[in-house]
Image 1 (spheres, rainbow, N blue to C red):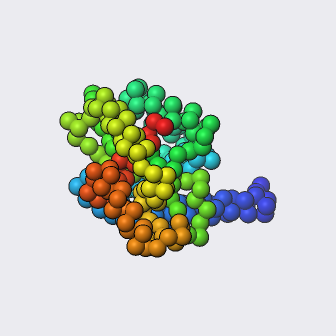
Image 2: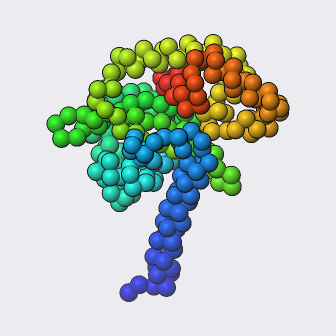
Image 3: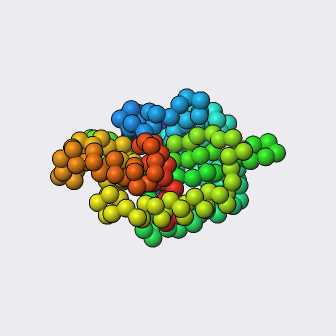
Length: 239
């Protein structure tokens, strides 16, 4: 016989799960809608999005495009075997890189921005995907322990791990050549902040913020903000 208290528990749990699902979707949608960089990614790159909870050490939400491109379903994210399933599909070399990043995260905390390529097993070969992972900042929500993941499918012809590693070293040198103030502004640019917001955060004028952005683009030899995001991510991937 089910008691009144047990009935209340059964009623509360689904409501709590639904509210958490709504929260995850809200954080993801608001972040993407307000972030200029991700709005510039064309539909042809099959952008997929997921939300990672660093406290629970698991993916807690993913959009339909991410789910379909990885042959998953929404229910799999609620299962404790998800982590084992993901690692079984990742190329062994890439899995080792992830574990290195996890060890760094345990010592220093999770990086606010990461960037790189992972290869996933599909049929008899591995398909490379390009990932960007960044900390969302959504007003009105505590998002410190969340990370937004962006997955872009790439052509196998573009994958070259040795080239990628040399790129990381090259970009690390370029970014380290910036002044401390410029590196601080670069981090804000990568988060999608406008010149006006950067000015307010750093207590400088919008004009000065624009000037810094222009100087950073010139020093790093890139043409736009999207390229800055790519370079900034590369420079911090193995730090």
